[in-house]
Length: 126
Image (tube, rainbow, N blue to C red; front, side, top):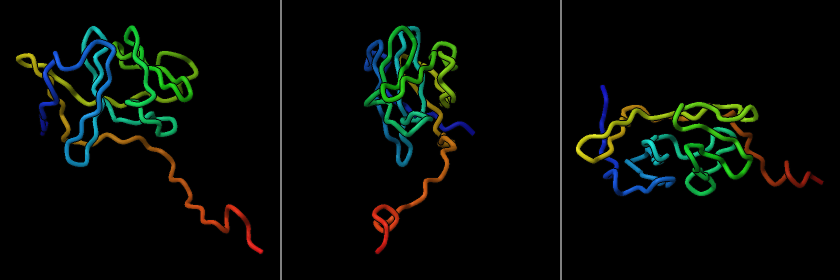
């Protein structure tokens, strides 16, 4: 069942703005792409780059500034051929000038588990 959570008023987020909101252990980015809003996890699906820090939004296209992956927020799809993964999107609705996001299921990317390295792995052993 949907868990609709009020994020903010539509007037609280300017066009081409990306803002992070936290609800318990769930972080959500909200982007105003000019024609509407999109809600998605806070990190780039490529290398966990925080999109609220390095993401740039212009004319409906979100660009991760670290490796230049791009997504068309109007169509909810990759904007270029070099972008290998799509963003995950939370269901969103607008009611009475407010934005609500369904956070009943936390969206996460299937990053590969990174191996933990200790000093001996990094510097070698004698």
